[in-house]
Length: 114
Image (cartoon, rainbow, N blue to C red; front, side, top):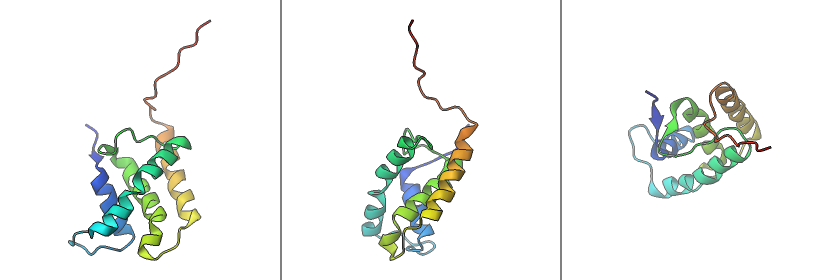
């Protein structure tokens, strides 16, 4: 059985990485909305770059979760008054590439007709 995480947990983890929410505190809706608005573009960018494909953001593989949350926090950094860091992006993308390189892609294979 594979353990997965949800989009809501992803937004919360990114907020935790940005230190914009206290332990045990609820995330302010304004911050949650701004971070949530960055999820779809990030997931689409990861798929377009061939890094990983999150088919359903309610079932994010746990092994990918920390890296995706780190990438989400990085693109959402201006929300917390921080700067976007291309080195952080590179680090997490390399980690995701390593994690996905040995597993099945579950992509539909195209048939070749002669």
